[in-house]
Amino acid sequence: MAVFCTQCGSGLPNSARFCSYCGSNVQLPPPFPGRPLVRPIYGRQVAGVCLGLAQANGWDVAVVRVIAVLGLFFSSGLVGVAYLAGWLGIPDEIPAPYPPQGQTPNGYTTTANVPPVNTTTNHPPQAPPTISL
Image (tube, rainbow, N blue to C red; front, side, top):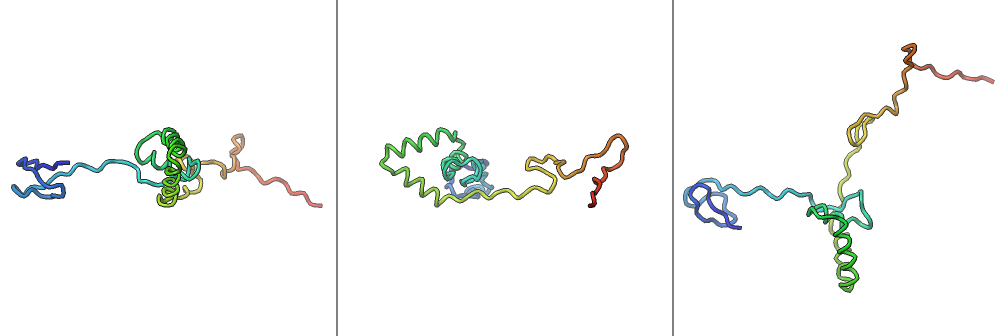
């Protein structure tokens, strides 16, 4: 990729941060937005290699899996060795920390631990009577 000065238009090496002719800053294009190459925890079929490759590159995971299976049969096992190398070399995704108590992972508040309120008398519910023998 060629790098040019935005002020004077002169050609510069790819590693240039300043123009060697006019001294202005060289604006580099922003990096490609994408996910890091990790093996996701959820959605795996075997080890998550195909899912990780698909998510990192924006591909359909079904197509990647079909290509991997076909490649396994038609490459005399070379794709299988590459899959094992990916299994060992691609790190696992770091799971998200647990949400605070009373919240679900999507941010909704749960009411599982909140006792129901008696709406007829506006008093909190009473404990059930104890039976003594």
